[in-house]
Length: 281
Image (cartoon, rainbow, N blue to C red; front, side):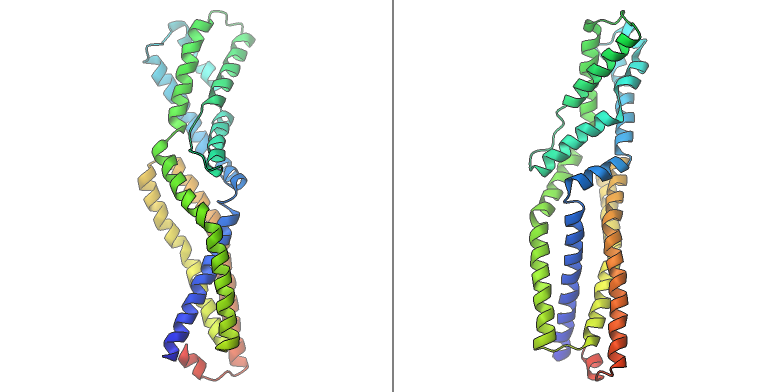
């Protein structure tokens, strides 16, 4: 019975230590709005979306009812001037702001409309293209904004992300605080009341390290599911990037626990702790 209780004690400490580490890392990464924006900017999302938007505008406009032959001659240079990565970035970051504010994620298209109008009018003025008037330009810009919004406003993806994020965001701080307090109490009880030996904590740390080092495998399984669900390469790439940012510190903590675990076991042998501790673990 003592062996079983000691085993449960060790498993609980290991699970709580892992939960504390993982929740802390999440709290300092995906819970920070600026951190997420930075990771989005370093991924290929904006580049891929910009390319998709440009190609779709070209295709859709040429097959739409607002098509104008005069304007079509200047279509590609106009799009090169108007459709830029920084505009896509501003729209997506506005969605991220909504997410962290607890609002529904939606693309308003404000930046698309403003930037497209400014860029195209500036290009026309710079190149003295008086053949293109407002009557031609207005339907084209409206169509371009509509296409851009449809690419960024991937409701079935963003809503799923938002739902999962909200669950994590609502509970992560509670999980971190609760697991930290529980871990501290359990360690104190184990040391003072039950009087566990150093060897016990050494093996417990090795078990904790195993959970830390296995966490990338669990996240990789989730990434495989995400790839099938999202079916967008750049979204999968972004989640893989976020996975690496979360698992790196967790794995480093796992290595630290390995070192501490073997150190504690070595010290217990050096101090010649009773062999009954080994048998009772």
